[in-house]
Length: 307
Image (cartoon, rainbow, N blue to C red; front, side, top):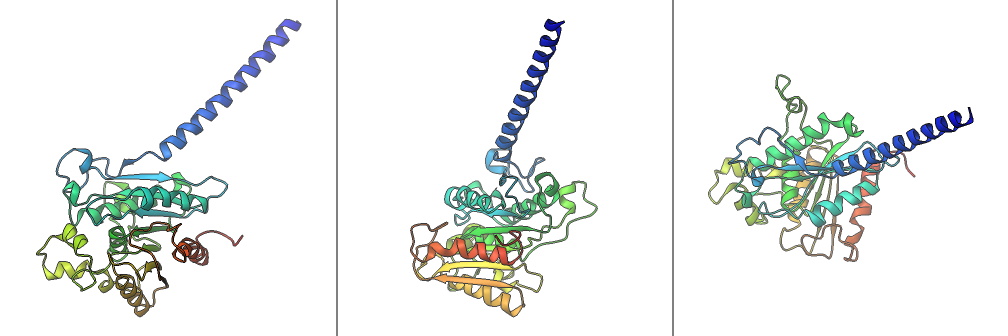
């Protein structure tokens, strides 16, 4: 009798150990999958030139700890002049910063000129990324009305394009992701390229996006300070006065356009710092921009209750 009881206890203990081990392995597998790039267009991107990796834009979901999660998510567009992507300091580092605030970050690796793509491919990818996060919000514990977009430099141009060129989705689409809106709920623009065809335009980004001799109508439509309306999302902008690569006029003119449209906006122009600073941890003064942005997010009700 004692042997039978002991054997039953041993079997129960073994079962408990196995269940715990399975749970841990599932959790680890989930975390691994969470930070693994996945295809933005599983059935092929529109206008794809082939089937190589360069023809396949991706998104990487980076989620905060569950006990910190605020339900807010941001699609992150690294810069690179529409010719490459600075996915380190303008992608992965940014995702880690957001996760620390309880915000989900979705790093978008969009198509660009070095991959053989110009307009409209980057915009299609950005719109699809916003739709994807919104369509799958329940899966990731995200509020579908708290999905923003952020961009650096040319990625800032892409983000501001997504914030001024959007639609409500196609309710008749076979793909459920295409049925939802691609309008971001807010924007964060960091030393962004905004204007095209202006004296302060970053010509390299413009050439990579639309070529040397683009029609005036296309140039104007993608000069985003000219496309702001009352439906443009609330926006946080930061730039530096010392930026000679992409002059601060890009942010200033976009901010003024937002004011004219009576859209909530906040602009910080710091005195020092070269172009492409990312989080700017080593730049006195400008290193404050992440804290300013965090305060703005909290003021917008995107980080939950005040601590």
